[in-house]
Amino acid sequence: MDNNNENPVVPEVVTVDPVQPVEKERKHRSNRLFVPFILILVGVILLFQNLNLVNVHLNWWAAFIFIPVLGSIAAGISAFEKSGKFDAAVRGSLGSVIVVGTVATMLLFGVDWGHYWPLMLIAPGLSGLINGISLADADNHPNAAKWAGLGLWFGLATVILGVGFLAKTMPIPVIENMLFHRWWAIPIIIPGVGAFINALVICIGNGFKANWTVWGFSLIGVAFTATGLFALYNLNWNLLGPIILIAGGLVVLSGLLTRK
Image (cartoon, rainbow, N blue to C red):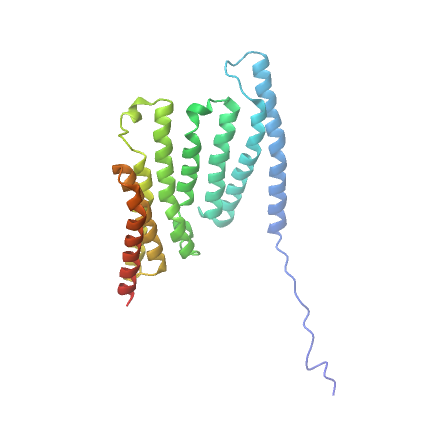
């Protein structure tokens, strides 16, 4: 008997996605368009300055730093079109646009870094705020989304710190008058309070059962809140370490007892 008829060979079917090559070609074409646009921008800047059409001196070479900015914009748009969500890829691209775009703009206009250096706190802070919006990733990456949400509090604290220093270096009287002595301690407390809030939300979601994520957020909350309070009230810094250790031990102990 011929065994070939009993076990026929099934040919392997290879599927080719026609959309992927089109997307790659479109992305490659858009990347190639960045360079001529930047060259045109540089030419316009030099032309205006040579004809004395503008009173502001611009550093034309800084325009080339906008190439990665345009690339991040294109990457963010592509990621949003692909997922349809404001996910980590879109937020990361937008955060890069803010940070690199701020540096490029400061270099382009040749601003005084002695006055505008707080912008280098505000820009990363805004990036952290945006990347901390983790609701879009909660379905696919729940654990990562919980920890990413902590970045929102750190971003908020960094923005407040940058705005405060900017108000003093500029100066901006409206904001400067609102700053009290040792005001910079508040941005230290904010991530600690945010960590406690995140821990409480997670604990409630788990039916008031503590897990390692809750303990981790609680320990972060203890460390930052205690440090901020010591800075705010100018307490004896030699006491900070022991207090954090005691509070951290109490948090873990309470978590273990609750778990039982």
